[in-house]
Image (cartoon, rainbow, N blue to C red):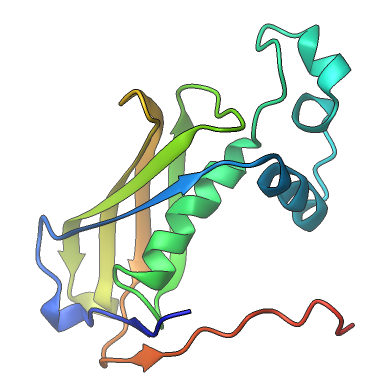
Length: 156
């Protein structure tokens, strides 16, 4: 993994953007179900999902929300960011194999409390918006560079 650096509140500007791309795998969906406890068969049971209007398993909506969280935590504003609020509208299903680009853009800065509002958009490989919304965060006040740590999955 590479080091992560933030953009402190004072260096943020309206319109500043960051993005990340991810190809959705079956394992992503399974791990999200495990972490969240959401066992809806629409996400995990191919036979059941085939009987729905989607015709196949789809990712959890909040998996997409998690992609937004990752861009905020890792890039803009980055490490030290406190996530306060999120509004998301899920516009289209996300399927295994989809390539998702998650984009955030600073739309508002509030000096009191170093709060920042960011527009959020997740689009698939066809340019179709699968999720849109906003996020409100407290941006860090100091520059920070950290080396990410992998989770210890064997610890209690």
